Length: 390
Image (cartoon, rainbow, N blue to C red; front, top):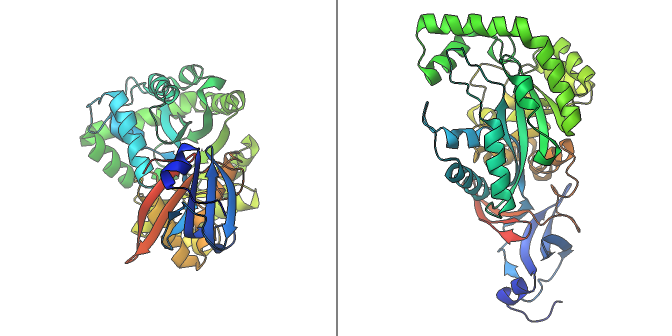
């Protein structure tokens, strides 16, 4: 027992206890309390609640969610085509939105590699935005933990020059190889690519044809050099190297040869199974799971989950989807700890973060209090490094 203290007194001492919670551990759910001291978990206990603790009323207590691939910051800096929103405001809005949906660690995806002469609006922005994000972090303006995820666009004109602008101080945690050559991987079906590009950029039939021809020409001229340079950049930066949209066993074999251990959104069962054969973790989009399929016409996340080929979920383009999809997986598998691990422990392991992702003594107190009402996860509290942020 901790003695009689008010919640305010405990927090003033750098302590906080969350009690009467159903605590989701790695393999089981227990009823008990978590004591937090100086931003880390001091103990996880079953039984009676310590005096002065926050009564969670039987709600679930899970680790803070870890997001590896989200385009959400890009959406905030450019809410509409050709609208450049003030970056400081966009960063804070993005950070607050993620905190509100239980995400306490994010790898902010930023495109590296620009197309100057193309029909689409792919201007350079990653270096400047990353610097602004680092500045906000250094000044204590952010609620949650931010790392960088550089999406290396193979079909671009400036990839190697842009990657050269990043160094170890930038905390680049992931570098993914993004090959959007029309007619393969994510957009094997050109009609799906046409719907996406024309809808986003308002291209005419002839402009879309020009776009396809230009992208294919870039791949033929620069693709090999860009791919090799991106692999080297990941090694230089100490970043986890990820593949994107692997479709065939041959794609996966190339990924494995590069040293890739994280596959983002493989598009077929064949590719996902090959990833597991090579020891590569498979990440799928939470929106895919919730919607019941891929918007690009590729393999459904639920199918991979049913076949035991899904390891990690990403919110992708809908931050709130991460929590919803985790509970949907829990229903599909009949195993809440396993489902929660796809958004906590598994992404932590994939990126080498051994200080978070599970509720255990000594780890960061990144926690989410959540209950399940009428099939919907309702968040009632979010703590990042022991500080309540939502």
